[in-house]
Image (cartoon, rainbow, N blue to C red; front, side, top):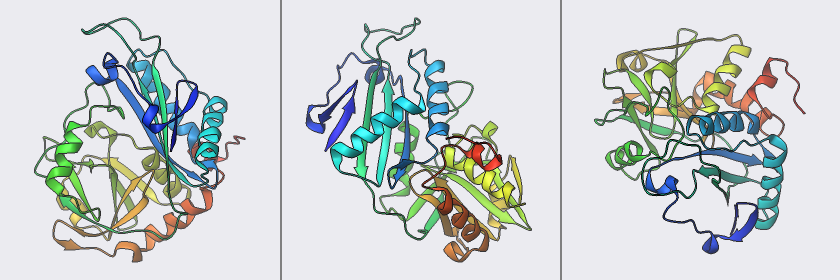
Length: 291
């Protein structure tokens, strides 16, 4: 397997970074994970928009365009003989002296990983369980997709190794937040609900895309602060992330839900599936043209 590292494609065993990289020492790094469908990097513009914004927050002097990123992705697909793939696009601060730094990082480490994924099929299902561990607050004004992952790691240990189970965080105030690696939605009385970004969740790319899909279908979407009891009264619950797409829930907090037989989940999944190999951004759903 080959990875991209700072302008070159190298075997994964040869990809090394210095222990003085502040991504390693202090967690100063961010990443995006997304899927390649038949050679197309789905919603790449949206992922790069978030990545670039996060880099600015961390004072890492780097910015990625669609053109240069697509070239990297084409190369890593070719080197690994892939058409459908999982991508992790990772940028860490780079080498600096030990100690906290206030000036900008000028030479970040850019590493792009790829691994094969099967061609997309039907929706999978999961059981959702409430976690005892609470969601930590963002390190800054909003949550970044950063190297700070201890809260998620501890939550996964609590939820257990079963890939068919997703742990759901509450905030310290007891509001629904998000899954360990997902955002959560529920549907009741014709309205789609999801926790607001102001709860401290990651503003997922797939989260935003599904909100746009629902609104384009004429479904009212409400973002807010909700207690678990409100989701427990839903007709459907589903989870979203960029690798697993839309994942209907069969059981939450001991109550049963329709899973992949849910009408809204199927409607949104059909719309999602139709976009996988063409869209660069959710803005194209609103009539925007991006080529």
